[in-house]
Image 1 (cartoon, rainbow, N blue to C red):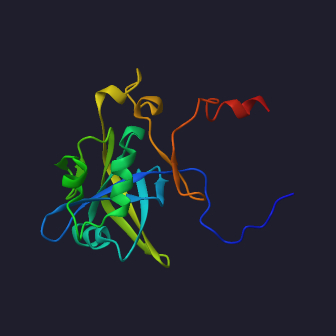
Image 2 (cartoon, rainbow, N blue to C red):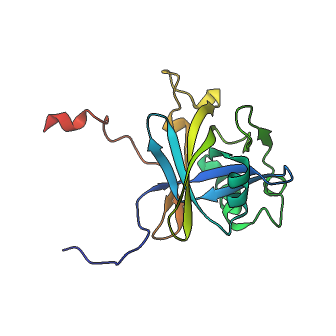
Amino acid sequence: MKHSLGAKTLLFPTPVLMVGTYDANGKPNIMNAAWGGICCSQPPCVAVSLRKATYSYAAIIERKAFTVGIPSESQVKQADYMGIASGRDVDKFAATGLSPVRSELVDAPYAAEFPVVLECRLLHTLEIGLHTQFVGEILDVKAEGDVLGDDGLPDIFKIKPMLYDTGHRGYHSIGPFLAPAFSVGKEL
């Protein structure tokens, strides 16, 4: 029997996304955003939801751009710090030892050390409540060569991305391959 838990932000798993922006003075910043994911296939888009109180919120509004980095499980401390500290108070790149790289396509930085980065132009903004959802059109995906598979696409087992447990507020790694998508169900 299922137990009612009430209206909560429980969804398993959620990706760990590092949102890169420049502030009004051109200072690079990066934040950990738990609420986000792919939201459209054509044009390719990703959505991230931020509170107005975040330092990155005003930067996205002003610059009309952001990046989304996918950290590896080995970068869990840096990724967590990006969600604890505020860019108003500290230079998060300097504090974590990560290197800011200026995107050639959008007015936003990313961390050189993250194995996969999405460069996004702000397409839509939706006020939802406590959070505002920013939809970014993905203009390019950049990936380190050592995380690419034989097919030239990023390999999830080489990236080793982190997953976020919304219920217990913890980070996890990915598990084993289960079955091919859009295929295994044909057996029914």
